[in-house]
Image 1 (spheres, rainbow, N blue to C red):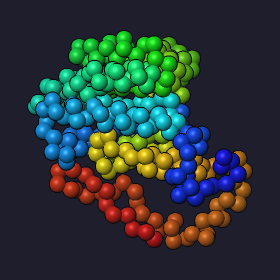
Image 2: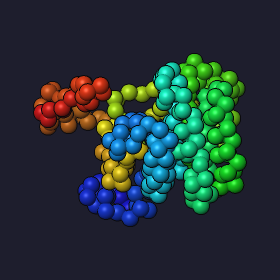
Image 3: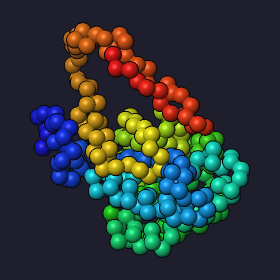
Image 4: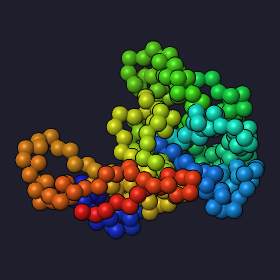
Length: 283
């Protein structure tokens, strides 16, 4: 549809789903951090209500991502920092994962949508998460639709041992042995908060080159407009590579101030007890 031109953003935002899906990545990683903050902002206490608040948002966001063309959605749900915590959150974390993504409502949703859903843990999972993984696997084993991969890492060294334990000649072969089927490399990471990349966000065998985007709205809050804007940016604005770059550097002369006085992306400030991006000046 847009093979010969870059459409205006407004046109892309209003396009039918199939047109957006045509340029969507086959695999996307959505690392939706800040779920506790999203619950606090909604007035939800940190008890079982937190999991019941989170569950429908996981389903709705995943449904949006699949509707716009993604076939494999990788969703990190637990990282080493969580398993190193103390207090109630760490104590109830595994049970809340089950309440959020493996209760009867979620399982019925997966089957109705024909989503194949797995919980993969790098290394040996805690017993509670192993039970969640078994429930998800059994409930969706016959589903043939998009793949939703919940991914957990309890320890970075354990993750490397998990990856290096596989004897494989190619990335695809290693992924198939660890995940049970091939997953194309993730072309897009949508994350939250600080612009950082971690092994639990980007498992080393699931990407080659990944375009990254960071929201500052916590939890599973991604909107359709934001997702369409991300797909637009990746497909039309970031795709600047060409086989012959002869003379391309001269384009910089037409935007000298942008390159000589440009901002440093990634600097921030404290907002209460959290990090928040510093304002970026426009040259």
